[in-house]
Length: 62
Image (cartoon, rainbow, N blue to C red; front, side):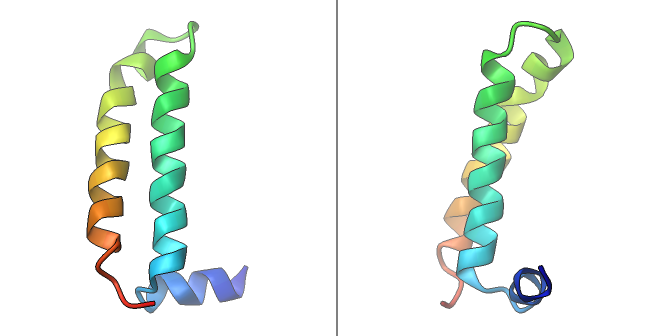
């Protein structure tokens, strides 16, 4: 866990890509769930933030 946090603070690509991919997956799950309209409403925003974050993070150093 501390190794993951140190990679986040040092702006390493692999840790931030995992965070961005998790946001994208969370947004898709929010889109497909039938229980909460508020989760459905924010699903596009979460997916968009994860996608833009992934594009930016792909330029970070290994």
